[in-house]
Length: 129
Image 1 (cartoon, rainbow, N blue to C red):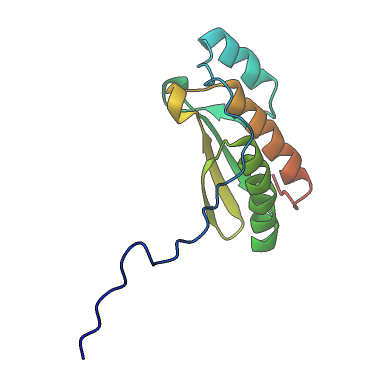
Image 2: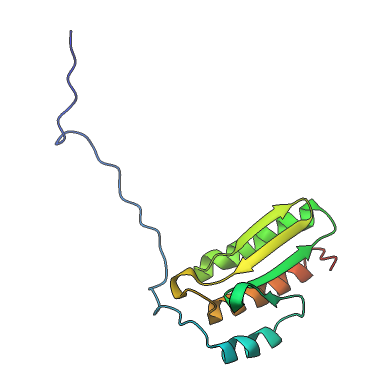
């Protein structure tokens, strides 16, 4: 006997789950070169400007993989709340980071705020250098 698919009216639909987020703030504005220069000086000296000052870069070196992974976990929680996510990679005890705001096409205050948060997280994660 051939069974036909139930009609759309009889198929129960799963409840919609919407991700709860704070209301969207106005888009972050790209900082001027003067603002970028001032903001970089407020960070740890290991931070540097990359390609045409369009992003921030830093290499974090930890005691071991657990330190690196713990750091990334701490930062991930903050980044999700801030709705601003780093571009990063991890190999054993090294975490390479590049920050910029894609929507703004360069650096915004969000990048410098996340960089400062990364410095705080690294201090509690067995940072070597």
